[in-house]
Length: 113
Length: 111
Image 1 (spheres, each protein chain N blue to C red):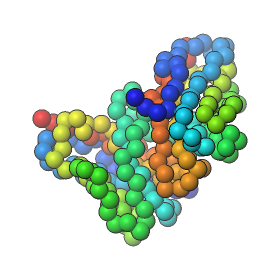
Image 2 (cartoon, each protein chain N blue to C red):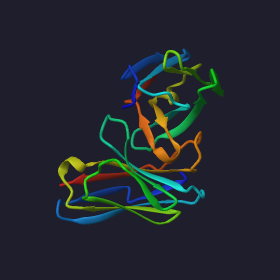
Image 3 (cartoon, helix red, strand yellow):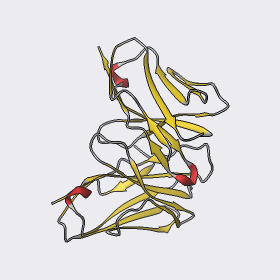
């Protein structure tokens, strides 16, 4: 079991739906991340939160809206997604310090119909 | 922009042999580099981190080297086992910057 918990594990949604992905960690980490991973590709960084503030947005379309309600939780709100947004969405956390690894959840497998 | 490359998409190794994976980077002088393992349907799992002033780092059957002159890291698994079969990712960055991953090497250990 990983120390970063993501729900749901699988999500199928239509292009007009609104849904949210959730991520939770209780390791006291103050940096949290969203990555997108397409099949047979490496994870690609989407967003970074540092001390509950958005610090990096890698030019992600506005149909993806991140939120960090507190230091343990990270959400990714989805609206009007496109079929090409189907992917594995990974959450990770780490301390703010350099020279520290990131801890990943097992992701949400998202399929857009 | 920084670029990180893993030259082998796939690598087949006989059980018991040493697997060696390569990671090269350009346009960057990293203070450290990380290696992760990813199994199908799972998130990446951290294996080793090596700093620029460390030539070599070991953990059980794993060994990582870091050559800042060649801009290259090598990842070795000695006495390989079928359970070592997975995708191995090298990564730059970290802390508040997020990680940039190489494309990964799919390692298959054949019994």
